[in-house]
Length: 202
Image (tube, rainbow, N blue to C red; front, top):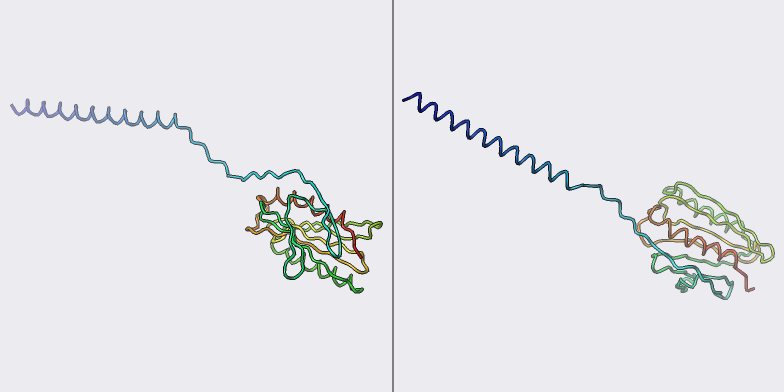
């Protein structure tokens, strides 16, 4: 009798073991099948793609000088008398400042150089691009500040005798060289246009 009960218990344990093992195999198979069919790929980094209109330039005249600006921009004069060229869709502004030299051209140019090179703390490099147009009496330099600097473009134009105009580009967003590169390259063309077309009114 004991032998018979023992035999029955063995069969029940064996049946439960087989059933449990079978269930495990089924669950493992389902997991593997599901994993194989759900292809998981790393998400690409989101980059905002900005598209800008082709530049169309028109003359902008001030009391001291004139130049051609991109009609995509807006402009205004602030309370200090400085001219601001604004790019609303890019959250960017080119600040233009005029000064009468009074024979101190070297001193003012040295100040512009010092201001530009203050950005070397965050900048990875500064490229200087000299400019000269003897016919229009305009001479200057464009500074391209690379890296996560507060201002990526600085420049000045002068006649070396009476007038000097300095400019700087600022974005109203956290500096990030990679994300701002398309906008900087677009605005750089406008800055070069300002330098090339600038004429003195006196």
